[in-house]
Length: 566
Image (cartoon, rainbow, N blue to C red; front, side, top):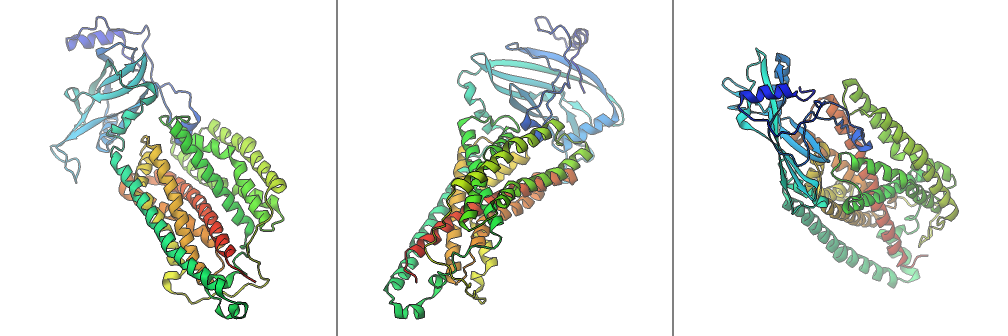
């Protein structure tokens, strides 16, 4: 509503009415224009930010008691827009030296909690802003904005236009204890951000206790059972071996029979390993400060670049495993690895970007950002994926080193099993326990992603991620033992699905968050939310499915390598 700063004459007339002296106020020669688009970073373009200059005239270390920004008449349509924003708790966001500031547009009085605006309630607009700017060693290290309740304007009546005088004041102060590198630490106390630091530690403690319980379970139960099995199997002589074999040893000739659709399986494992490496590197870079966590979109841009740069990891691991499974068409496996995760991402992007363009939203990707992503895929990701596949073909490990020989004819799998050993029950348990380890922290991650908040506790997030991988791997191994004990040798895909079920639980939780916590609505917001949450959940499915399979493979080779088999 203020496209440019007020002129000197307008300021002087307004100052006379309120008996304010403007002598000594520093002014620029020409009135400052607002609404000029900033040059966008890649991350800002991706998340839909479109920064524009504001018309406020603020000079370094120059405190201002009062200045006029502009005078304007608000018509009925504009007043209605302000009222709707105030009743929906809209707030504005400004940046000073990349330090964000938040403030509410207005407030209501005597409003009914359930019915909202009723007879006698008031709606007020805050036209005056007061900026607090802290400095240390000639650098701005703190920024905050407040509103002046004494200068609020009543906009309850929308039947007639009103004149509104927008103004501001600036207060500079020294902040000697806050260094430049620690300037984002103050935002953990903001009312707009998660402030319960103790709750984060409660999440970590909850995850750690769950890890201890699962570790105790695997150590006491599984090792005791395995020890008894080992002792029984080692004491059997050749004559009674055929009669006494039962349980997991009975399927020693089938347990290392390679799975169906081995190319797709290897591509899923390789892509999951790549995503694990990308996530770990991403968190390490955020912890060390090499990625700016206070710039909106920088984390997402870094994730895209890391995924492209580490593409060789996925293709190398997938082709290596494919060759160990006696696969011949390694090119087909490489192509599947290259497209398994990016293709769903592109499909979701095309859908949500079309919706954003139809609604005229700034969330739609600019053409330059799309070209940048295409260039990264074409000139970085695809060449590195091909190089990784070629490297695995020429230098990868070809011998699977199975501890037992595989028979030519597959053994029949028992069909009658108790309900608690069935696949649906195992799938539910496989996802529930890891999800219970992270659901507390998951709320704050969702609030940061979809509430446009700043997440700064990357140390805790790193611990939570490591504990999640451990919990998922342990529960996958435990369920694998029960599957082998009931003489079911089809464990390859089962272990991958058990590990990846946390992805489904995260997606189900996203529905609860959307309808009960987010306050979002409409086709635009729901398309973005559920589309990109599907991509994130699929990434967790691949990551933790791959981790669960790798632990299961080590466990299976270990137990079958400890017994003697014909």
